[in-house]
Image (cartoon, rainbow, N blue to C red):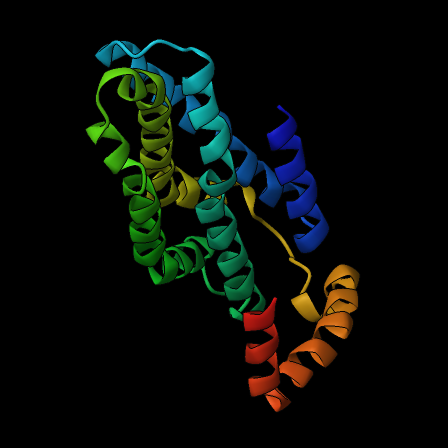
Length: 196
């Protein structure tokens, strides 16, 4: 619940669109529910370690939905008002859908080496690896199935252009001098990073 509220607040803050936040929020409980269903089917218990796997996965689970939503906002900003909204949904989802799906699958595979652990270590960490892997696989699946449909159903009307969003303008004012400095002095930044 806490994670869903944080996702909602951040999405609303940066996009200034409440219904867009609903799309991102839905991914968390549905993805976790899918993971729990598969856990039940394969006999993995819900203990502290398995719940830890879900806690680790939660941050990355909504990434796909948020990227999809932001891309749809960009497409809506640029689209002809007469263009059907479902066409805009299709264009925006097909543009970022495949890379998102594969990036989430790569994250899903990151815990596969844990399944090679044996004895006490295996018994301790395998439930965590199972739940993280299942939750991320569910998020990958939802990012290319449920999220585009929810975007088409919920994201309607005018969306605020990124340049008019006061939060984005403040952050860009702070970011531009930093990125300007790093691009003007690349070797200094590399040397400082190595020293740190």
